[in-house]
Length: 132
Image (cartoon, rainbow, N blue to C red):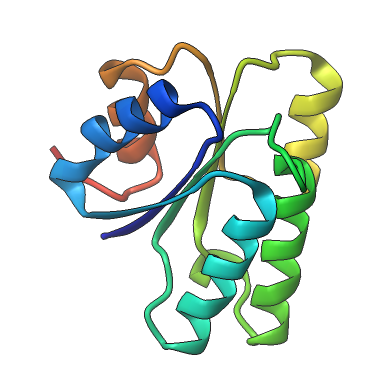
């Protein structure tokens, strides 16, 4: 599995990397713009991500906007429905408006920090990204 972790906070970024690295290759981005660029480059190289863990509160471009742009890029490449990347929002924001907006923009999961091994493993299983 190819994974993109998008998190501006050093400790959170490395916690996610530690939790996810047993399941695949982890790339990291520290802001939304960098994440969108990495996402598009991966598609252009025919090495798409299987999973994106995306914080909302990011510099340069927030996670909500990055999510929207990633889905636009997929449409440009004629990728849709179940063929798209699985995007899990990993954020401290647990208000209804942010949750609703993320699902409207087609995220598959929404985890509120702190992210634990149990939370991430359960989400990966629910998305059929891992089986055990």
